[in-house]
Image (cartoon, rainbow, N blue to C red; front, side, top):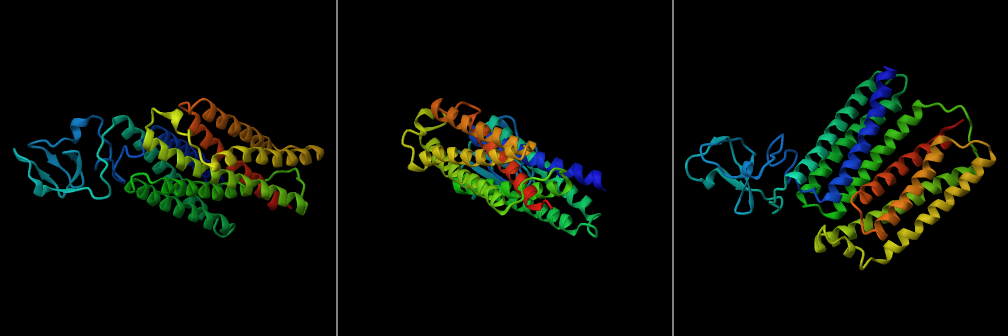
Length: 338
């Protein structure tokens, strides 16, 4: 089962990154409440595409859980029933998780596709665990971690529900993102176990500490970035999506620390580059790390000086998640080599 296992491992990792990218697009476009309920969307498996589908209709068969918008409020069908000529409030109950009741078909379908990708990623991790079961005697760690990934995906789905129920509280979105990176870390560890690099990298304690610190610095940078992003979200709520020049008009001190800290991250990695260069071996994953750091810095400049162009925010986040994955792979390779 080695080939199916490797296939689902790589597929799971790629799909998780697609979900991260889709989530960034959802956040950038303000589509997080495009589906105001969970796991369905306005009570439907396939969401509506036009506003009239969510209006109350006479002589119409409603299913339990389906949603209508009436007097700018969400109402949920209590049971399966067919409406009569006049509206009967006894058939409906208010949606109590939040009071958001706007239907925007673009936002709805962006959020729906994000959820669909998440469901496909969840299935991929489930198949990963199933194929890992055939290795349980030979490699029990692989099976256990594959099961942990499946549990993580279930927990991540529940976190997604809490994000929607809270009407997109920024700190819950940040926790949701952090969980995605933790799942990436487990998958990266499993992937590194499958690959057997032939060339030995520096194996001294000082080099290991340096590589570990480089990952810690990146995590600090990502953590500060999430705090800045929460501030931007609050500004978007206040100013609106169309007023991007105002989002960082009163930027907190943390933003300037976050901006300058990227140079520290780059500097530490240049030291690692120097050590590897002297050893005459630059692994491809480390070169990828350097490229991603540069792209992170460039997209940060692009956002700040050009007032958040359309794709700058999701790219900045996506590059950060890729950087975390590449650094994790590189660190695990250093610590696992014999």
